[in-house]
Amino acid sequence: MTGTDKLRGFIQAMTRLAEQSPEEARWLEEGGALLEALVREDDWLPDAMAEPGPGYRQYLLHCDPLERFSVVSFVWGVGARTPVHNHKVWGLVGMLRGEEVSVTMHPTPEGRMRAGQVDRLRPGEVVRVGSGEEDAHWVENALTDRPSISIHVYGGNIGAVERHSFDPETGEKRRFISGYSNEFVPNLWDRSRAA
Ligand SMILES: [Fe+2]
Image (cartoon, rainbow, N blue to C red):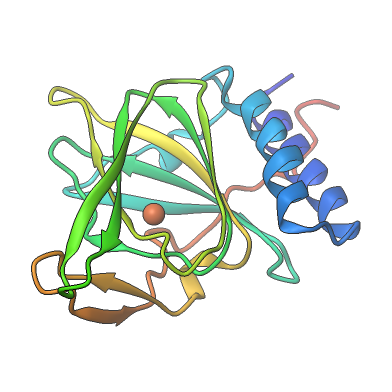
């Protein structure tokens, strides 16, 4: 099986799940199991979708045509860290290469934010995140000598979702729409090599 076959198979399985219009809990459970199988081996991600930049990059691997889910390769350069942000939709994060740290942030009564749970993700591990309003967190590359890569699945076209980043000191909210780092998505449909 080629790397393209693996990614295409994952997207096909997620699309079959989407056709059943599952509840969020089923997306997280069954989609999470599919993602666990995908990130179990690091031999399928196209090099162009693993290219680090300064900071972090988010490469769209696939968006469902009805925008029911999207699959993104997050490449964390050395020292890369996101702002505190929310998602508005459910999410799955599967660690493919290297390690990352995610810190959940909670609003305080004084209007600031305090750090909550800290998760360190290692290759093959998957984290499931519900679509609650208070799902803010920040993420950074846990390694200081090389890039790290995680594969994310979201319950919508995440690059087009209007969401918020937060100043943790003041709690100030800023609207943002992330977009994607790539202009073109991987071609999963040329089956001539397998033929
Ligand atoms: Fe996030």
